[in-house]
Image 1 (tube, rainbow, N blue to C red):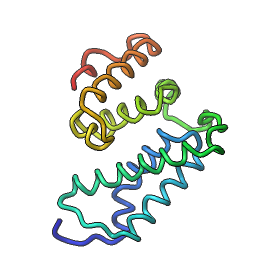
Image 2 (cartoon, rainbow, N blue to C red; image 1 turned 60 degrees about the vertical axis):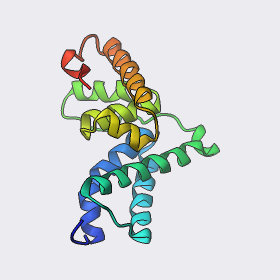
Image 3 (tube, one colour; image 1 turned 135 degrees about the vertical axis):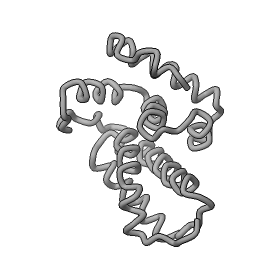
Image 4 (cartoon, rainbow, N blue to C red; image 1 turned 120 degrees about the vertical axis):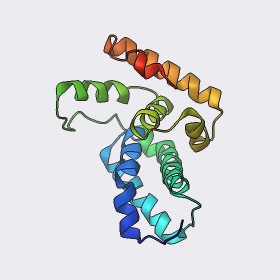
Length: 162
């Protein structure tokens, strides 16, 4: 990358991505906020250099995923219940989909988020999550099947494209 961006610009650029991944993978808003802060603290301390904007974004996603793994392993967080339904949505469909996606196993939630919200391809998700492409495809297939079953046909063929 040509120019060195200020930390404030980086935070503004990746805030939504980092927070949404953290929230998707954590059980509480508080944990997601802690991870959000930790990711940007790591960035400001390490000041890594990146080959491209894609490399930079991948770094933020990878660090966020790693920090959520650490926080979810702690004994304290093993006892926390899932996100409560106090998050506001524009309509009831969005709330229903969020609630159902939130019930998926953690890896399934993550691949669904990265594919549909961030627009990553299977190969890129595999690299980000340090898994084989076949594993990511399996997780996507299973997640879609679970969602399809729970949403009663809400995911049509258009979403089957990889």
